Image (cartoon, rainbow over all chains, first blue to last red; front, side, top):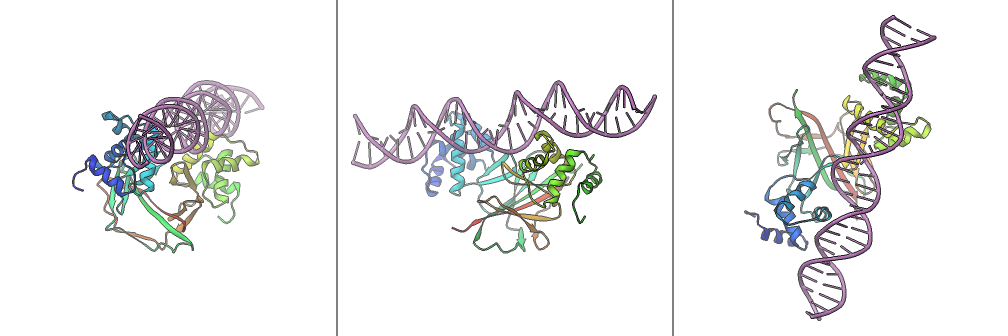
Length: 137
Length: 137
DNA sequence: TCTAGGATTTGGACTCTGTCTAACTCCCGG
DNA sequence: CCGGGAGTTAGACAGAGTCCAAATCCTAGA
């Protein structure tokens, strides 16, 4: 997908079993066109900046729907700082504590070894690795 | 420290540059005597169960103070599910999504390799690795 | 022992995210 | 054109955590 358009988004949504409504397309477009980590609040601001008028409830409904369907990923860096990440490929995160800046760490080079076997009847949902950094004093 | 007593706690606090008041001792004792991950709310319940009467504000103040001073560690598994962990040694966490159960993963065997060099003027505050699991369907 | 002052605690109001609900709108198949 | 299910909405609500000004608790010095 070279260029992100609203038409692309509709396809993408359908491919993930999501009925592409106006609001959903706008929200998907907001996330995917910028390849950034956005908070629910930021999504709402962006989507409503043009004219679309999407309610808070819909933003939350939609983000949770996208999560369920595996379209986006949730990054929890702080209670009350949850980001939604359009990049679902394997990668980790670097969190700059003071500024709140969140950047990706490509997972290709990172190896996590020696994790113990899971208890019987359990399966991994996801592995979240967050490196917290700050500016040296 | 073989046995956790309130006297021990006072020492521990002083060793971390914290003025050991009644409330702080009770809160430290709650966390360290059970070696468990507790939420702020659980701490409050435990501390007030005997008689101590400690206010919500104090519980939060104190937990944050302990955090700053490196006495305890914060584990954020979910927005609105923050745990405080008296174990500050190197270890990771296993989070059972459905039950909310949080258990330690000893870090001795776990190796995380290939993390990129930090940007200049940055230092690592901490590395949080959370493995999310669920019961297989 | 008494006292002043800084440190700590407190209740309660407040904020911030996110959820819930019941009504409303949209859109599609017949 | 109509009926009905899916989706959206405003606004009330909930829970976690913060803030603030007042009250309380030490403790060092007189």
